[in-house]
Structure formats: structure tokens, C-alpha cells
Image 1 (cartoon, rainbow, N blue to C red):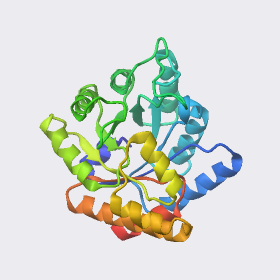
Image 2: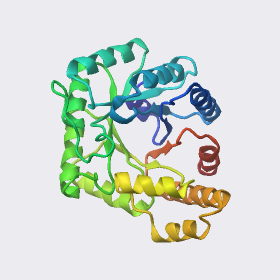
Image 3: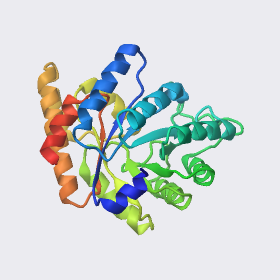
Image 4: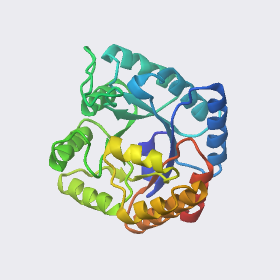
Length: 286
């Protein structure tokens, strides 16, 4: 089912995101995690691409399993990285053959060690162009990325919102945000988006903090602010993994409750391919 059709039936949606595994063991663990979370009846499940589009085949394999064996509504990520328009059309045709009707369309990240996106001749330079191409190439529901704190490469929040409006104008049906740890960024972002004429769903993406090194890396890569109070709590127990896990889960639960109470149209969980933490958070929110 198209996610845009799900929206017509539900005011709030709940969804999970996974990344493609690199080993057979990791694939088995991923399928177990998805199967475990299936009991929560997610409205859709998304699967990312790896850096430089390197995991495309694995992404398609996982998407096929989720959609056609586990019978969940699946959404495949698709990026501009390393692909011409012809190659992207081939991927779209593959997705159609798998009965996939939903795509998260993204520009994609620069290669490791670089701050500059590399354009592929014959391809696309940004997510809005990719969205326009997908919109004209097949009957898909299209998601786009939003950045409550601004894209790390944007010169300003205003520029970022202009790009977001273009994504909507080019055919995006909904927006899923980058992770954030302070809800005020989402509320300010939502208000600014509405003032800009962006009226499609703006679904907040949340992720539990379970590892200090990992969240510091995410913060550096995507510009996500770690609230001072949370950072202080984590630093106090930095040598106690279980305490870090509990603090992260509690923060995500409080964050999710506040978002839902203040009009968020659901939640998108960045699971990091783990089901226990997501399960603990989800059962406290639903």
C-alpha cells in the first residue's frame, strides 16, 4: 500500500527504519529484529542505502523480504549517489517488480572524508531533482528528508526551507526528519515550514541514545545538538553501558510523548537494526 493512502486512513503513523547488513549473520539479526517489531503493527518500514550507494543490492533484498515475505509496507531509500538517471530508472523498475510503492528520495551523503557531494554525470545533483524524476517515472508515494536544525551544508535555515518547499512542489508526499534530541527544533521547524507553504506531513524521526561515542559521531555528521542536560547525564555514567542505555531510552520516551501530545503526525524510529530498545520505547508511547 502507498504511504500516501495510509495517511488518508490514519492521523498518526508509526514506522521503523533499518539499514542493510554487511554479513550473513547481520542479515539474520536484521530479519529477527524486523520480525520482532512486526508485532507492533508498524504502518511502514524503511531500509536505507549505504555510503555511496554501495549496499543497493542488499537494500533491495531486504526490501523484498519485508514487503513480500513479512507482508509489511516497505519503503526503499533511493539516492542520487553514483547513479545516472538510466540506472535509477532500472532500480525503479526493479522496485515495481517487487510491488514496492514507496520511496524515500535523497540526495545522499558525500564520500567518507569529504564534505562535498560528488555529482554523477547523467544523474541528479539534489533530492528535489530526484523526486521530480521519480514522480514522472512511476506510480510511487515519495518521502523526502527534512532537517529541523538545518542541513549541515545549508547556508541558512531559510535556504533549507526553500529546498524543502521545492521537494514538495516536485512531488514529495511527506517528510521524515533527521534525528533530533531537543523537540524545540522540531516545533520551530514545523512552524517555519507551514509559513513557507509546506503542508505535507512532517514526521519526526527519533533515535534512542545507547552509545556515547556513536551519538557524538551522529552529532558531528548531521549537526544534531545534544541537549546539555542529556549530555551531562550521559557523561556521568560514561563507563556504565546499561545506565547509558536506560538514560537514552527514557529520553526517547519523553521526547516521543511530548511530540505526540503536541500534534506530531506520528513517529519514525531509527532502530539501528535493534529491536529491544525500540520495543521498550514503543510500548510506552502506544
